[in-house]
Length: 262
View 1 (cartoon, rainbow, N blue to C red):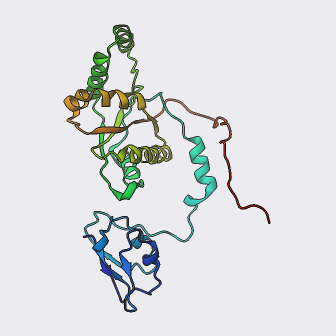
View 2 (cartoon, rainbow, N blue to C red):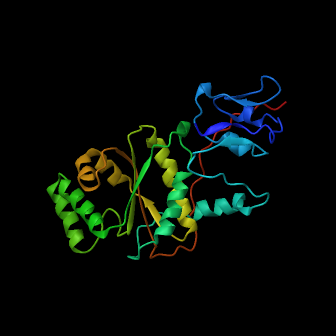
């Protein structure tokens, strides 16, 4: 059990952990706050995050806490808004590989994406082997039922066109045997794409192939030993294109339910 208890010498009895714990595992029976795991801690870490005195005792969480600085512009609305609007789905890539340390930074973004009930069961496969990527493309084409469509894709392949992954040098596949990860993967890939954007990398969600591989499970199983459901596929690489502005988008249809005016 990673959460062990509270350092009573550091605890200031503010009670923030009691209010914050979604499972109700903290209480104050005799003037001292105690941790009781009878309701099974889900390892969300909110107690660690909210304690002003860093008094929560924990171990074996395979990570360390990150202290927030008092002032840091990474949380400013304008900075995040600009990042969100500047993100484009990239479908033109250089052949240059992304260094492993940068790929690992993108994976770190996935790692810290929120998930339902903190059940972190998503697994990530990163394919950077050109032959393996070509094998995947050819296996998809060979499995297509329509002969006309198959021949059309084969023609594109002869012209050195990648019809599915746009010649991206890296493919991320998020997979799991947990049905909840169908939602979690959406958030995880969004985190990954935004993280990649800050590193000067391009990315794109490849939804069509995700559906196709789940309908033809033998492809992923034969090539990559994936028996799970595939919940997300993202490509990554250096863009060959440069964008100069964010295009307009129509307003969100929004309805407010508010208190009536007095």
